[in-house]
Structures are given as C-alpha cells and as structure tokens.
Length: 588
Image 1: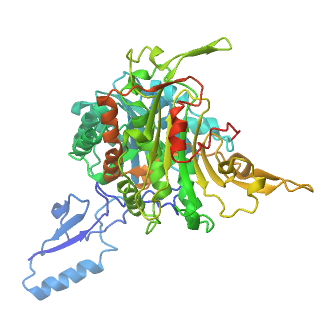
Image 2 (image 1 turned 180 degrees about the vertical axis):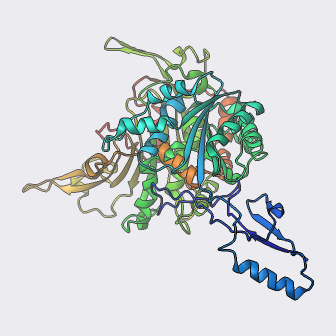
Image 3 (image 1 turned 45 degrees about the horizontal axis):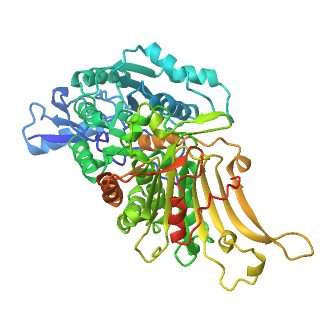
C-alpha cells in the first residue's frame, strides 16, 4: 500500500491568462510580477527515487512502507511519525523559485524596434516598472554581436525630462541586460539556439517569455511557429505581440487569425494598436464614466455629431512601397480611428476587466452598418511649388507605382444603429501631406432650444454650439468651448475654452504609448489589445467598401500638399449639416 503526497508549485503554464495580472485601477510600476512558491519539505524516510516532477510543476512523492511494517495500524503510526519529523529531518531541497521575464524583439534591427520598442523598454526600466529579473534579446537576420546591438540601442535611449538623475548609470545597467542572436525568421534551428541562450539567463527561475513581432506581416506565421515550437517557456507563460496590419480585408485577417491559433491560444496573442496606449485615449473612459456632467449628455439627445480627425503634415517620404499596398483607410481608419470610436461610443461596461470592456466595444462595432461608397471621399496629394519650395506628389515617391490610385486621404460618415446613437453621424477624416499634424476627437453638441441669446451669437449658429475637444496629439489637452459674455457695459458674447492643457497642469512627462502597452503585455492586461472578434467586426465594416474602391478603380480627388484636403470632404460633412471642427484653422 502506498500513499502519495504532492504539492503544487503553482507555476502557470504558457497559456495562463491570470499570471501577474494588473488592472486599470491598480496598474503601477511594481515588482509584483512574481509569485514565488513556498518550498515544500519532504520527509527523510521517503525515498528520493520516488519523487516525481509533474508536467504542471507539481511535485509528487510516493511513500514506500518501511520494512517490518506488518499491519495497517503500524503503517498509520509510521506515517504520523514521518509527519511529526518534517521540520527536523533532512528535507528535499527545492529552491524557492522567482520568476523572470525574457523579452525577445523579433526584427530587432528594424526602425520600429530602434525608435520605439527598445526606448520604451528602457523607459520602463528607468521608472522601475520592469520585474526584478528580466532579459532583453534582439533577434533578426542581420549579423551582429551583443556589443553592436548595445551600441545601436544606445543611440535612441533618453531619460525622462522630469527625472534625469543617474541617467548614464541606468543606461549601462539596462544595456547590460540586452543580448542578440542572429537567425532566420522561419528557422526552427535559429529559435532553438535562442531558446538555449534564454535558458542560460533564466536558470533556476520560472521563465516567462514575451515575443514582440516587429517584422512584416508575411512572415508572422513562420516566426510564431518557430517561437512556439522551439522557444516557448517550459514552466511559465509565453505571449506574442503582433503589430498591424492584421490582414488587408476580412478574408486575409481571418486567415491570419486562424494560422496564429495553430500555435497560440487567444490569450497568448496581443494585437497591438499603439493609439490605444496614448494617454488621452486611455483617459477617454475616465472622462466619461467618472464625471457626472458628461455621461448624461453622451447620447443622440445632446450630441449633434462626433468627429475623429487624424492628419500628418508630411507625405510617405520613401515609405510609399509599404503604404501603397494598404492606403490610408487600412493604415489609419480601420484600426486607430475605429478603435477610438468604439471606446467613445460603448455602453458602460460591467467592470474595468479587459473582457468586459472589449465585449462592449464589439457590441458597438456590430451595431454599425458597413460603409457605403456614397458616404466616403478619397483623395491623393499632388505636388506644387510655393515660396521657392517644391512639394512632391504622392506618385513622385520612387517607391510608389506610377499611376497609383491608392488614397492618401479619406473621409467617411459612419452610423451606429442602437438606441443611444441612432441618427448621429460619426465622421472620420485621415490624411497625409495636410496643413497640420494632429489627432483629435471633437464632440459637437446640439443647439440650445429657444436660445435667448441667438441674435447675439452671429450668423453661424453651428460655430456657437458647445464643443468638447480631446486632443490626442500633439500637445495633449481636453477643452470645452462655451459661450460667455465679454466684460463691459454692452451685451456682447464671445466663445472661450475651459482648458485642461496637460503640459501646464502636469509636470510629469507623458509616457509613450509603447511603454504602457509593453507594461500591460508583461502584466497580462489585455484591455488595450484587440481581440479576434473585434478584428472581425472592424473588417466587416470596411471590406465591402475597399473591394468596391479597387474593383471600380475609383480615382481619388487630388489635393495640394499642405492643404486641408479634398473639397468633397466638406461636401460630405455638409450633407449631414456638419462643419469639420478643424477647418477654421484656430490654434489648438
């Protein structure tokens, strides 16, 4: 007769979703990303030959009855004796394990890694936000030594403006944790060699592994397959961050998701949209759900229209080859702006849990009708010369095919078919080579019924309605436009801003979006990452439109480099009795 004694070491598997979880309310820079198990003592009289490590990290030991035990009663007494002597007898030496995080940047020699990912990781380290034990590995095809990687990384590292003490020392410490391995993205052997190097740094600890795929989408699956089969964690979690684009339409997106799920479960896939990590986007829910004055107004009863505006004051600048394959609708509208729209329009979630928030976003997307060609304007910037300066056309970019019809500008009117938003136009506008650089949300409220001061407001009553502006970038701010009396003896009205200007209100530097998203991925917080059904619903809105544009070879309206964009964008807004909020060129 044998008795089995076991103790779980509580080491999460690679698919664990609750390991080291942080929540929006409690997320902070902390070292609580480890839960070391308590050592489990085994008695002297249990043979170590019978100790078994199970697949999930549990330890089991089989007690063999000692010789000369002839009855069940004697065996019971012997087991009680074993239990009583646990503290003083020789123990089975199980080291108390701490966890470690290995962050591998796949595509480490690329621009995104150099300009965003490595600097974000250093910023987290500088703020003491990374776990106590961590290692950063770069993986790419380029031949490079550890020292060469560190030199490359060091060129883009900066310390916080508001907290610059020990900057040089911190950089040296961070770079000392950075290593490099060269290999092909589709090579099992290359990732197996990476796995061997990772284990050297992880030895004796629970190994958690995060892979950031900073590579072209056509090699996502090869890299995921190799990482999953040859470099997954054996006793901790394994997570993969995937950069957009997530396909070109519904079919290719579904195929990408299907292929990823051959090697990963949904909880291991972190689809990143860096706009969701921006400070003002994350503040959107706080603004709405924690301020009594806004939530009652957040509906068709008081809101006339909502505008999501994205503009860049530069063109493709040599990146036209990539851009031409996707265009402004896929690059900006279908992901960045649509994700912000879903956050803006969603119902109050049950909690701040990631799944509750993402459930509400999906409901919004599924309530929207697919875009029609009549509700969309597309444009493409053309070159001109002004003040002795020549501005190139989109097709002047040598990486862009001659005669390309790819839009560099798009405006669209979308509608949500539910009780809260029925009939309210949600207008999107995104473009390159425009007159300014900005990303903002503009909420235009309805006119005051029976306004006593109507005659004092001037002929353009639309410009006199209240407007809430959330400026995502640059120069982050939230301001509310109100009407007020100008000081003096006459009754003259003026339009003023109640302004929360972040730079003036807060001395602390605003973290980069990648810092927040990397921290969340390490902590297992999925609230700001895109779930597969969200992705399906987003593509369902845009795929019919994209196919129609390409099949009919719709020619984009040309607009001057540095202008406000195509004239037809204003016609689209006027159709719904709306004026674009950024068209008055006021300083924001």
